[in-house]
Image (cartoon, rainbow, N blue to C red; front, top):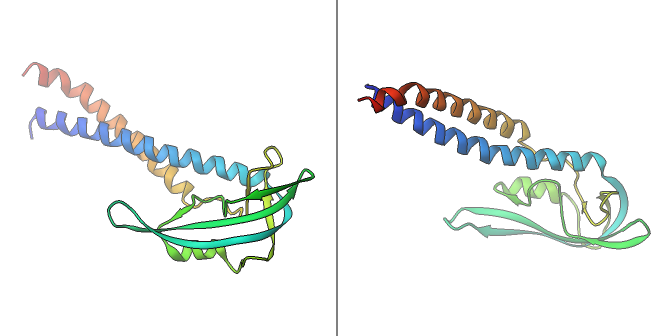
Length: 164
C-alpha cells in the first residue's frame, strides 16, 4: 500500500467520521432535549379520544409504525388538546415497541397526561425517556475519533502525495 492509498483512506475516514458524528450527534442532542423535557413534565388528568397504531411504508419498502392519538387535558386552568403519545420519536421500526407505548389505553378512558409547565401545549401520554441515547452518544464520539484519525492521515500524507 503506497502513500496515495493511505491518503485516500484518510479522506474516506474523514468524510465517514464527520457524517457519523453529525447525524448521530443530532440524534443524541434531540434525545437529550427530550429527556430534559421529561424531567420537568407534571401530571394532570385527561380524556383519551383517539389512539391508533398505523402501519406505513417507507420509500424503499421498509415498514414502520406511528401512533395517532388525541386527548384533552387541563393545564393552567385551560382545556387543551394533545396529539403526542410519547417523548420517543413518533416512528417505530418495531411494532411491539409501539404497542408497548400504547399499552392498555383505549378511547374514552381517563388517562394521565404529562405536560410542560413552561409550555402547557406540549404534552405526552408516556414520559419514558427516549431509548438509545447512550448508543447515539457513543457512536457520535466514535465518529469524531474517526474524523480526527482521517484528518491526521490527510495532514501526514498530503505533502507526500503532492510531491509525488
